[in-house]
Length: 338
Picture 1 (spheres, rainbow, N blue to C red):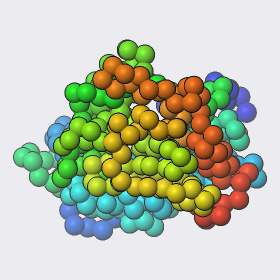
Picture 2: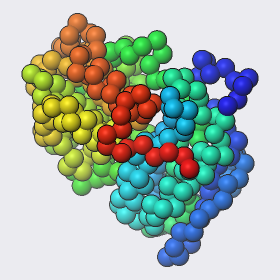
Picture 3: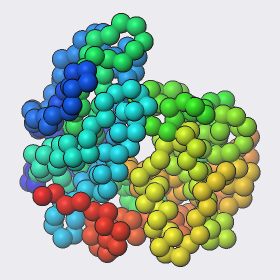
């Protein structure tokens, strides 16, 4: 580890590391393993498909230094498969799972001195797949680049897990049926910056998006999945193509059912959610972020006095315990660095 680095000052932001991974392919040629090179800028045509038409995907995942003093990944195969589904949707050549996982292992191994000590954070791993070849006219790029860079990030919750206040967006939607809401397309994220910034200026942590058809059912929280709990039953929006199939979301569903809780994937109406006992959102960055209140049409609904709920806290402790190897990995989710 970097002995001189101030690990306690880490936030969830970019700290440039030493090495990144890159490989390219042309047309219908198969992907070949890439190579490591110093972290830095990459040359790209002004006519690149990703710059002109947004033909690009990204993934977000973490590597952890565990209590057993080894470096592990959390379900990296699922990130590889999700990127393959996204590549198919955006007409890009899918990266084989073996090349994806090997690339992740290589770049983390090359930067392992940047993996924070146990409890001080994690290494965030960012794979990118994009149409890097020049193209004029809306069509697939002639060549593609797959690259991975990494950065150490601090714990999402400095000073403990605090409940956040959310605002339901009245005028914006994240995705519509038949669109690209179900994949991690780069173009899904810029449109959310305006409503998010407006909500933060009003004192909220983030916005909640409702469905574009009926404007009544909850879909996502900013860039995170949503859960609410009523009478010890967990409810979460089902995967119908308009929300991202979060890997943390899937892990929570499996973990909750293993703990004996019922989990319902379906239509989660906003009117139902604001009357729940607990609520939280989840994703790679925060793992689980408890929701203290939701404001809808000017009415603020508070959960449990604005503090993290009991089941929310239980699931957070179990999931982070598996990632840090203080809880048994009963699902076989951890992938150790070779």
